[in-house]
Image (tube, rainbow, N blue to C red; front, side, top):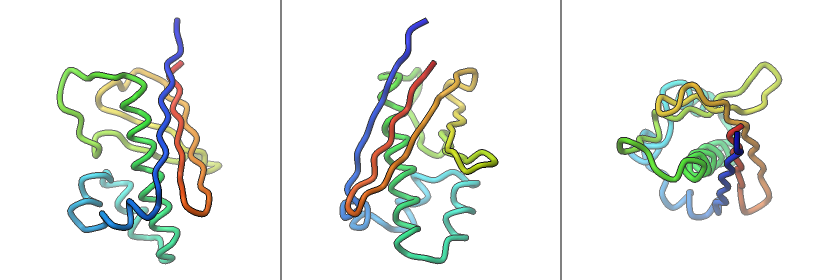
Length: 115
């Protein structure tokens, strides 16, 4: 069994320019939207949105192609009981995807590994 890896880096300034209700609803699933709206700090909201965007981009790089057009809202980046992110996807629900998201001052990076 081979491992597949996807990685993506996003600049906060790029996401900040794109932020609109339409963009947010195109990126975040319902559970992610609920968590996003519960965040009161604007910097943290941007980090959350950019992190989910990077993670979903990294997820697409794991598979390269899909049988149908990919909708980011069908790929959810959720958190376990200790806050570690993981992916739930309607496209490959049987796969285990390990994920890590890290932030710096100007960037967020995400890596996905399919075991």
